[in-house]
Image 1 (cartoon, helix red, strand yellow):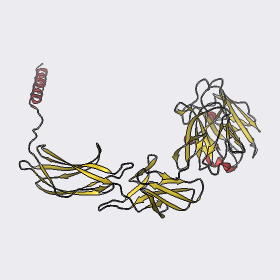
Image 2 (cartoon, helix red, strand yellow; image 1 turned 45 degrees about the horizontal axis):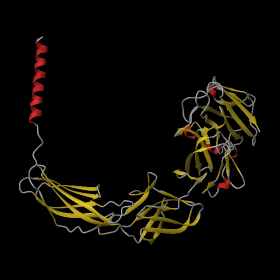
Image 3 (tube, one colour; image 1 turned 60 degrees about the vertical axis):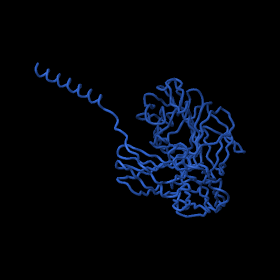
Image 4 (tube, helix red, strand yellow; image 1 turned 90 degrees about the vertical axis):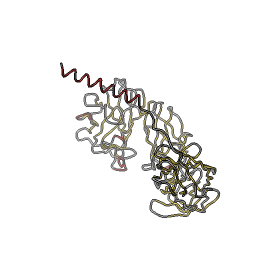
Length: 444
């Protein structure tokens, strides 16, 4: 019992001590009046400059702590320099003037803030007129290190004309301007041209040959970039080789494609489109929302069914989407085999409620979509690992061509070879639900 009483009295004493401390606590007093005497003439600067300032800092009563220089564009603080000030005297500092897009010439505010060790503070505001450098040239630097001079064609506007490949990966370099200017690089980040990086911008023209590459140092607008239109709407660049659009499509809808110079040589997926003599596409599957990706590495459209803002999955009743992952199949050919890479999963075309189709041509490498000698792929409920058709949830009605092997993988029937150059249509019927898939394979 004595032990517990001792603990109780200790807790009471601690609480009383804390309460007394809280009652006596107060913010430290602010004392002293530091004085800033600016010695340098800060009359103007350029965007991209490093501005040097010199000031005398004094306090008659207390030791000094810091001298801060802060630059504001409007109400936004865009740059800051902090100098430790241990004693009265002259201090020299440098603050960077950021170079940003769409900031017009005008006055910024430079704040000099002097503080002593007792939190006494003095603030001096200086209006600082800023101008954007009007360079006489820029330099285009390609990924191979070759440099091209971009001549000034107007205020903030620059251009180089040369014999370029269809795509040019490069960044743009601006020379130093002003007394303490800095070299400014313009590259690609977060889906746009921006300053302060040498990440390559992928300029792209409809054809290789002689054309202009342009850049505006005020707006950061550059050209050329392929403007791809699919069904009258612009596709969005994902990376150097892929552009996408997500839209609702209807069965039988006719779609025009613009901006692809070699479109006549593109592979057209027969599960999703037919193409007429004018290059117009007719959409074949069920109406719905789809993601269409224009892939310039293999020159074809990747088509994937969507639900809302995400890719579709297979529902219990057989609606949604079915995906193919595995070996010996690929689009537009086996040169782009799916394999067990879920990022490359093929979305089967929904041809009717609960029925999904993939059409392939037997052949090796670039000559076919499916290997004529052996197959080893399976059907999944989503683009990725998770739900799948195992050997108990799928049967084959075409066992003379394809059988269901262990784990639900598809395999050619014993001693069966596909005929090179022949077309085969794989149709998966899940109208009985996703645990009762029925596969039919037809040779055409």
